[in-house]
Length: 220
Image 1 (cartoon, helix red, strand yellow):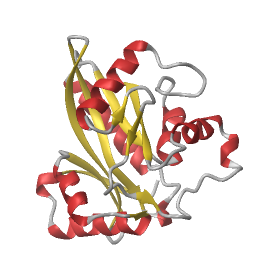
Image 2: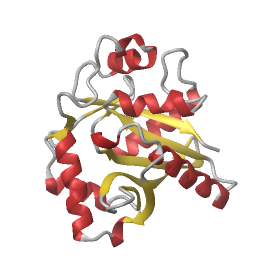
Image 3: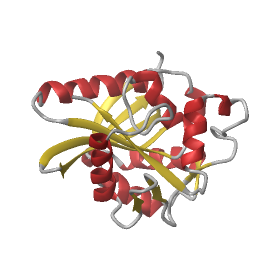
Image 4: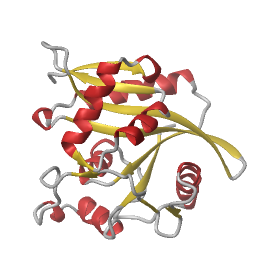
């Protein structure tokens, strides 16, 4: 692990930080609208920054916020991971996984009695592939149906975030006109990668792009 990590408050980000974040997004994604990206960032509370240790240059980040919903009459809280990107030159570094894990463990320690989930959307295989690598239980998945209790959580969270674009029958959210997409050549799904049943499952669920699949992991 070579990159350094820092947890920053979105409200305290400097203009230079925001410009570098936008640059990273535009380098790896098509259709990145600066105004939409800024508005999305301002809806988040925290971000995990990945920094090059010698220069201190920002080379990756992941935005995070908490969502509170009611599911079957009970309160449920979810950590929602928004924009996440690591500069391609730093792929293979596990700093983000370690930093995110420590961030979540801290949340669990502070709220031991809270029903906590992790909610994320997957439009690319790298995001979804994170789940079987680090978790035993996550949904949806290729090898078993989503239990009713987990589907209820997914429906509540996706319906809260995307009330006009989430389809509960398919479990996918129809992307809006300003939705960005990974550039060609960045994390393409090849025939070799389709041998992985997790990646093949993701592709089947989001065949009619642009769509994203909504995923949930129970954290405690």
